[in-house]
Structures are given as structure tokens and as C-alpha cells.
Amino acid sequence: MVPAREALARLKEGNRRFVEHLRRADGPARRLELTQTQAPLAIVLGCSDARVPAEIVFDQGLGDLFVVRVAGNIVAPSQVGSVEFAAARFGTRLVVVLGHSQCGAILATLDELRRPSDTQSRNLQSIVDRVRPSVEGLLETDLRHDPDVLVKQAVRANIRTSANHLRHGSPILEQLIRDDGLLVVGAEYALETGAVEFFDGVPVGV
Ligand SMILES: [Zn+2]
Image 1 (cartoon, rainbow, N blue to C red):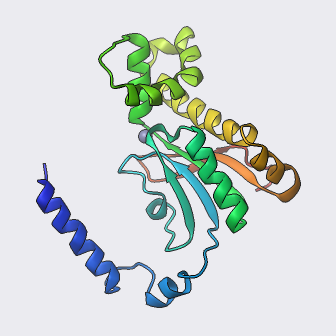
Image 2 (image 1 turned 90 degrees about the horizontal axis):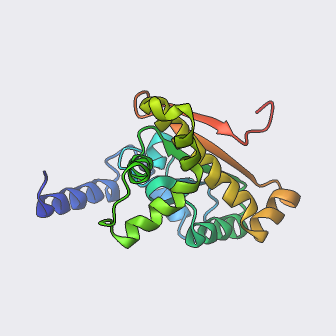
């Protein structure tokens, strides 16, 4: 475990490298260009998992991605609002819901469904409650006997649910989808390979 002070020192050091342009990050010119405006090429609603940072896994730089991260890439009103804001304000027309293999929020929800407990914090429970509807049906199928496949299917079901919520849970986004080319897709990042598979909502031929 890295002590807090050391972690803070490392963050400061990393930021210093960033400011001094010693990393592969965008240079000062790009940073200055972005002080007045931004036009992200995509909005990403991703999981908070430390192993799945959108900018790194998509190799994008400053100003390229408008990222909303929350454990389990769930959709609650503040996530919808963030996506609405970016789509309406910056004209971004691609929304990616990015889940990943072995997602802790999915595993926690499956555990909770198998062994309900009342010890969980209410705040954490609110995340489990958002994931539950898309995965509980899977536990009623034969998948419950195959833990690996169950988790895989649950991860994908949760991604689909979040993408559908964004497509149908907001009049602003619905209008942008209908009239203005907004596309909401679901994708899964594989921790094992680093590959992202876009599996939901991708138009034929893309
Ligand atoms: Zn996760």
C-alpha cells in the first residue's frame, strides 16, 4: 500500500511532468488552444475502475474526450445531465458507454443478489440498485451454474441498460438522436487484452 503522503507526492510529480511537457501528453500549444473552447470527439460514460482510464485506453489527448466515470458505468440523473450538457453544448455526436470485464460493481451486485446483506452503505447500495435490474434475470437462468459466463453476460447486460437509458431517458438526447445524428453505443474493454469491443448500437457497416 502506498501511503497517502507518498501518493500525493507522486501525483504532484506527475503533474509537474505534465506541465513541463515531459510526457507524451499534448504540448503547451494544444493546452492554450483549449483555454477558450473544447470540441470533444466523444463522450464516454465509463467505470471508475483504475484499470480503465478512457483517455489512455483510447489513446486520446487533452480536449478529446468528455468523460463521466462512475462505478459500474451506471446512469443516474447526474450522468444523464452530464451527457446532455456535452452533447448540446459542444456538438459531440458520439456517446460511448464503456464497461469492462471483471467489473467490481457487477461482482458486488451478483454477490448481493446471492447473499443479501444489510451492512452495505446506502450510497454503495444505490449503485447496486441501479445494476440489479439488468442482471437479476440472469440468475434465474442456467447461467447461475457458470460463474464466468454469468459475469460476462451481466457486464454486457449492464452496459446495454446504461446505453438504453441514455437513448430513452432524456428528451434532449432523444431529440439529438432523432434529428441530429447523435449515436449512443455500448462497448466493453477487456482487462486481459486491452481491446475494446463495440457491441451495442453500432450501425451496420461501421
Ligand atoms: Zn468496473
